[in-house]
Image 1 (tube, rainbow, N blue to C red):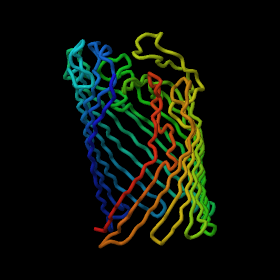
Image 2 (cartoon, helix red, strand yellow):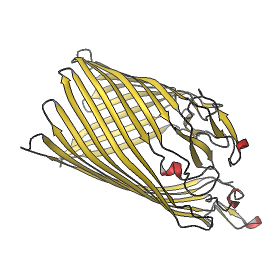
Image 3 (cartoon, rainbow, N blue to C red):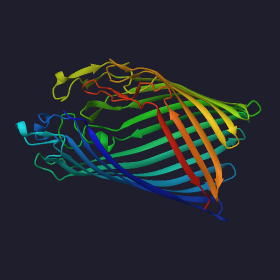
Image 4 (cartoon, one colour):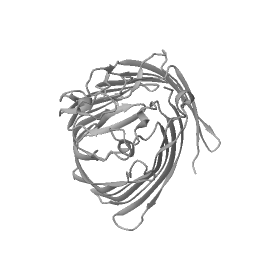
Amino acid sequence: LFDTRKTIGQTQGGGSWRHRFIDTGALSESVLTLYAGQRDVTQWQAIPPATQANPRHPGGVIDLGRDYSGLDARLIWRWEHASLIAGVATEQQREARRGYQNFIGSGADQQLGVTGALRRDESNSVRSSDLYLQGEVALAPTWMLTAGLRSGRLRVETSDHYIANGDDSGTLSYGYTTPVVALQWLPSPAWNLYVSAGQGFESPTLNELAYRPDGGTGFNTTLQPQTSLQVEAGAKWRDDALGLGLDLAVFRAHTDDEIGVLTNAGGRSTFQNVGSTRRSGAELGGRWQLHPNWRALLALTYLDAVYDDDFQTCAAVPCLQPSDRVTVPAGNKIAGTMEKSAFASLAWRVLPQTELALELRYQGQMPVNDRNTDFSPSATVSALRLTHSMPLGPGTLSLLARLDNLTDKVYAGAVIVNEGNGRYFETAAGRTALLAVRWQAPF
């Protein structure tokens, strides 16, 4: 086999326009936001030629061109004790996806790691359109009610231009309505207590739909959207005299038809719905202004993420027979989720426009597969940050210098969930340096 190589190009741009109304009653302002971007990827994957002998295999080279754009338009009304936002949003993404064999020739003359014969050629598109409302009303001087509603539809379409192995053209369509409500109580200027609940909807992405578990071409049409119900409660406290601030939140989310990784081999992933899952946890954040020139930050996170249902997952690739699958029992940790993490920093303002900071980041162990047979180890890494700003012409020049992973620690910065060959771990970068310059001026 050969090393995987990638070439990626990406461009993105956008802008927004805001208009404030005068003498129009409650109608306060309108906002229009636009964005667009483009991304190209060519990837040679470590898939053996024998695997590509199946006439429905899409090949070992991915050639992908993707364009995306979006629009959001909203009107805002304000009254003495209430406000309302009404808007419409639309997003679209189009891609040309081609697949090629990653070899040419045969026998002793065979050459690997090159672009060979065409095996896949299709045009994919996804478009979503939403209507949304969000309102706030002061029930009393210390009570605030917030509610929102989003309703929309998403359509996915593929047109197959390579039909030598069958026509995989088709469409998928999803509709959704997601409400949210929150209640906020301010018993004093220093305290803010809240509770919120909402429903969520997440459709499969084009990447998640792109491949079938049997290795064939065309969309994975068995994949369904996941829906969720989330509840959160929290408190925020500030004491300017002491220079202290604390944020605490506890949460619970229940998801149905969770989308999870089914197979992951040769750089190519397939997905399935794994039933119900549950995520419970807490987050604590704190800041302390020890001195006008010294400040400290702390953030702690705990997450208990488990599968609520038994389900079947692939033990090998290709995953064609029931014997290729094993059972994942309810109660297992969700692969790729981290139970404990923490961040701390201490910053010193050396000069009025210069700050030096030491950062510490802790990441706990993480299950790398659904069966929980292996975990990425925990790690603690440190960094130094120096920032400086100064006036330059009509604007401000900002400088940033960073040294990350000061001790050059070797640890897993990311994992490949359910990697078919057990190669789950992706080593993080060693000691690295960053220097950034930004100049900002008013228009």
